[in-house]
Image (cartoon, rainbow, N blue to C red):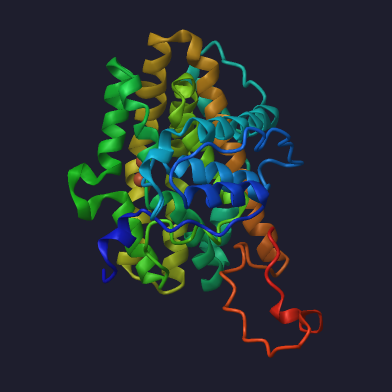
Length: 365
Ligand SMILES: [Fe+2]
Ligand SMILES: [Fe+2]
């Protein structure tokens, strides 16, 4: 690992803006904490919140202040009231879209663990893992890894926010899962560090947040979902349900990802992150469904439907993510946003930019 520690572990540099709202937030974050205009985001009404680049990046910008922060941004922004108010407006739009997407899954008489199993059994999403195992070329695989790096380089962190909000059996079960995710306290076994080696083997930037700029809205949405659930105590049931669905749908896809990398000629250093999850998550799924979610609902029965909502939302947003990758690839497009544009070439004086469309500044998308 050759890069300096600050790039590996964050904070990341502020991303490029994607519209007026994220532009206003980035502009503000570059300066000392101050009040934002009161009307910022009040008329927020995107046609599709999951693919709205400006909304998802704005949420991501706000949430990251609670993880590693942003390079050069004053840490007091984390609790700046007008920025929190803007985040709350964005969250209302996002949460309403999630509830429209999955409704309120019914809690079966057999209990919440049975409800989770039903949701997972019914989850016949796009065949992303099978494609990566059998057909994806190196370019596509690298894209997949770049998308996932936004989460995997801070793997398990959003779910750790549940810890101080729980007691008893649910807490013990969550600690057992998270202990594995964090490598039992061994840096070289932390899942985030295993993933960093995968990035390195694929010659991708291993810096924290290095691929946020090329991650489209739907990829940010998979992350924002965890942050939304993690940062609101009222959504602790959804957070545990999300983690359970994650663990229950992990073992087989991870086997496929590892096999896909082996097919492309990569060694066990590259595949270790995926191989590790095949065994670990076969165990975690039992702990997550029965001990963690079951334990939570035994202590707080009213949270059963939230657990299933969180699981259903996680599965549904992941289906949107998978569909985006597969649709992009089958249309012959990259699934990533365009990389940072090259520096504009020097334009001789008096030459009209209109006549040189290749030097036009990139549009905000
Ligand atoms: Fe993991
Ligand atoms: Fe796990």
